[in-house]
Length: 315
Figure (cartoon, rainbow, N blue to C red):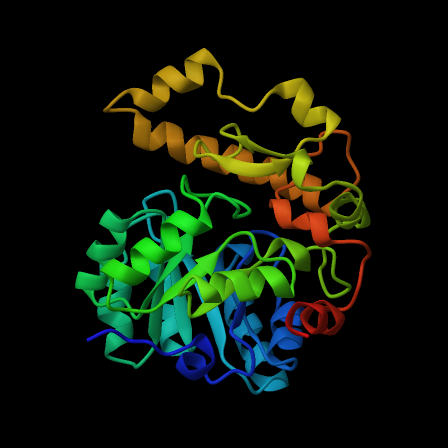
């Protein structure tokens, strides 16, 4: 029996949109603004260095908004904090968890008992069926238009495939930056959309003015895939610095990444090093600019409050 509910019904929101969890970018102010303007937002647990900071953020969002809030958990071994982040999320009763880059089995097991919904990032049918069998409440179809870790398939291929083959709802991730694109993914059968990059250049975002302005100045043609950031293909703005360092791992990094005994540790070190590089770029003016964003920055024409960005997206 297929679950044909829209995201508005699943989460009790006015518009079928999740403000996507963006590493380093998402914060409690952004989630509060999302909730108070008819959508919902999720934040990566990794945006907080300590459990105390993570707890404080969840409590602040709860106190200043009325709608649902979500948390994004990286569920593979590159995230040693996952166990505590899940425990905190369950204990404080977030409304939903988005899992990325690994098996959601433990997350689903703990959340089911508490009535917390679990949405799982997937890039193909095989993994979508796997998480459906584990008990996921919805899949997030990450397509090739997504910002961050993009998938290999287009919206037009991936969404109808998952809608046809899965019984749980399909949320689209990637390629939604305006009303026409939102309507398009809904027409393909998605129950809603996870939208990220157009919110980077928001007044509520804490990233540097240079990062925000880059989202205004650059467009879809300036987005490239780089494996140097995390070891996996990740979308970045093709700044002069990115052009200088290249977008592919060097021969040694690539060779070590394929070594069966070492690849887990190499990937973890690449991830940590890449995240530190992104953090420096996101919050300070530096010539070493590695800014993560997706092609929907094509629709970003100015730095605006989140309320205006949402209004333009839905009306």
